[in-house]
Image 1 (spheres, one colour):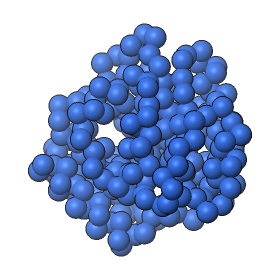
Image 2 (cartoon, one colour):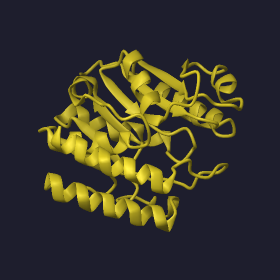
Image 3 (tube, one colour):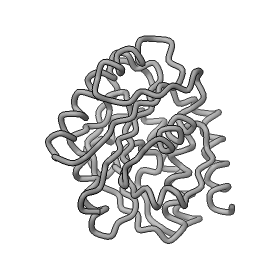
Length: 228
C-alpha cells in the first residue's frame, strides 16, 4: 500500500456555507501529503448551492438527484472511488482535514479501519448533551454485543482499506450507516482502531439527525449488523 491512491468521500446535503472551506482545506492537506488522491463529493439532493460551489473545486461531484440519506450518498461515493484507501468526513466543517494523515497512517501498519473519536480527543462539546447521552447508550449496546470497547460509534470521520469495505456488505441508507460501519468493523475480525480527533460545533446549521426516528434506525442497524 506504499503508493496507494487515496479517495476522500464527502457526503453533502445543503452545506453551501461550509462546503467550500471543507474542500479547500482537504485539497491543501492532500496536496501536502504528495500522494495520489481524489476527492468525491456526493450531493444528496441539496436545494441550495452546495453542488454549484463544490463544482468550482478540483473534485468529482456526484448527485443523488434527491435527498436519499447519508448512507446512500456514502455508498455511491464508495462505488466510484478508485483508491485503495478511502477516507470519509462530513461536509459541515466539524472535522479538521489536517487530521486525515493521522487516520491513514495506521492503515500502513496492519490496521484495517480507523475511526476518529470525538470523545478521545477535544470534540466532546461539539455535539449536544442529548446526542452525547444517546451516543453513550449506543456505544454500550455495541460493546455488549461485540465485547469490544468503543467510544464513538457515530463518527463520520474514518479511514479504511477498500478491500475491507468490499467485505462489509453495507445496506444502510441513512445516518445509521455509521453504526453499521462500526459494528461490522468490530464484529468481523478486522483490526479496528479509534484515533483521537478534534471536532468543532457546526458553524451554520443544526444537526440533520432526527433524534427519535434515526435512533430507532440505529438500534435496528446494530442488531442487523450483529446477527446477519
